[in-house]
Length: 132
Image (cartoon, rainbow, N blue to C red; front, top):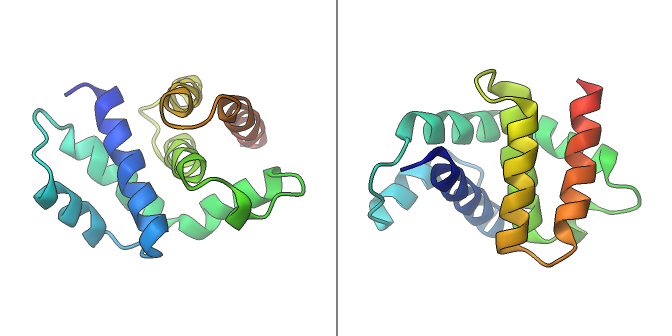
């Protein structure tokens, strides 16, 4: 499986975590048991979910600090999942260039969210990237 498709699985897991209000690494295991996913880049997926769950408060702080006048509970769940995965990549995965993390998040938002979400996601991630 290509990294892009594996990243989409990470977004689905982040979305599930948010819906269930359970940011626990066991959600990854449950997801993998529930779905047959061929050629999964398990190492990347595990690292991304580990980084997300271990640093959820810091990741959320970046989102909150850069979402002008928007509380985190008002952000669409799918956009929040995309942002969390991308910020985890930007902050904690040195093997992924920041520009790639941002571009993939924007593309995911075009696929899974509404027509204007990609602008919002690009803006938040661009600001986070400039801050680090």
